[in-house]
Image (cartoon, one colour):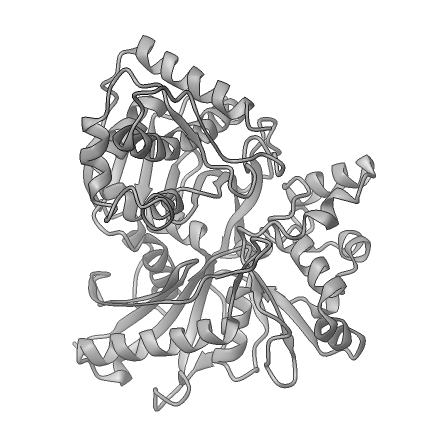
Amino acid sequence: MQERYVIGIDQSTQGTKAILLDRDGTIVGRSFLPHEQIISPEGWVSHDGDEIFRNVVLVVRELVEQSAIDKKDVAAIGISNQRETTIAWDKETGQPADKAIVWQCSRAREITEEIQDEAFRDYVRAKTGIPLSPYFPAAKAAWLLRHCETAKELAQNGRLCIGTIDSWLIFRLTGGQIFKTDYSNASRTQLFNLHTLQWDEEICQRLGVPASALPAVEWSDGDFGATTLSGFFEEPVPIRSALGDSHAALLGQGCTEPGMAKATYGTGSSIMMNIGPAFRESKSGLVTSLAWGRNGQVNYVLEGNINYAGAVITWLQKDLGLISSPKETAELALEANPEDCTYLVPAFSGLGAPYWQSEASAAFTGMSRTTGRKELVRAGLECIAYQVTDIVEAMSQDAGVKLSELRVDGGPTGNGYLMQFQSDMADARICVQKAEELSAMGAAFLAGIAAGLYKEDILGIDRMKKAYTPQMEKAVRGRKYNGWKAAVQKTF
């Protein structure tokens, strides 16, 4: 039997990864390239859309060449992407109007703060599942149309395209032939009505974002055109899936049934629970989104997002110089003074779910004269688990049932101290997966299913590497978590 392969592309905040899966769904090749993090004097975070596209082409070429496969054996491509990052470009030339505004960036705060109409804010939450916030593409797109002259001119001439990174890549990969996004990415824009499954004209008009400039919304396992990868493939390869990275990880984790939940630890973190085919509004500070649209049906999720997870470790290393490698953090945390009560609240760009405090400031609290390097590093590590626990607690309240298991993926899951502390704080079984590339895998699995290479049961294969169960005494857990809640309150 001729071997056939699927490529999963994960275009994330820090870089672009590509994996090659064989007919059995096994990873047989990997490639990665970082891209520049552009930070302005104001603290605005941007990416170069052209650089991202070039890197996608380069990592896929490198992947195929290093794997030494026949290019003709690539059956399909799937794409997962950093979700709320927003880019505008010229429909005719494909040239970006400006740098992409990264999801972490809160420059669009001016847009959301000037809207004092509570009825409209309630409307946005009810229709999109998300409270009005500068972190979502609706406000970012409005900011671009207010401050970027090129974007304004393109809009006036009917040549503006504006969307998330998936739609940008699909447009460029297909030579400008296809301008589409999928249900999962659309649901994160705050411009998409989760009840009608259409762009919401009232929200678009209020924010000044022309609906005509937005991509067509396709099933996540739909037809996104085909690509030669700038001439690399002799015959165009079909793009058969597109998913936001967290949604792709949910699928890659096999969380296909209501009540199943996962946490992806990356630069930030997304904690997501599948709640099935019916919309449910969160009462606990979470958001409702679409998991995906596949097999002719959409699934909804409850979700909470953390702006700074793995990024905290990067900050400890590159900005504070407390560590030379992320691998040091577990050992230093174990050596820290157990009596020290230092907390880090990493509100470098405000706090997301479940607090939604864009004005919050980052802070170390609870330090004493004996607090040193080890204690600060431990506080940085533990704040990731505390933030995830905040969302797990809110999720349990909304679902009306205690979450007993959390499937996790991402680089930080290799940190044994963090994972055990996460299990203790969340009071739940933490299941670490063998592969770290769950977002790329989810997109590749879906593309492979759509292309007829895989059967549906590939999503249910057990890929767990290690499980952590709660070990901490409940009184100690309560004291530590209450201390965290008190620290958070001091930041806003």
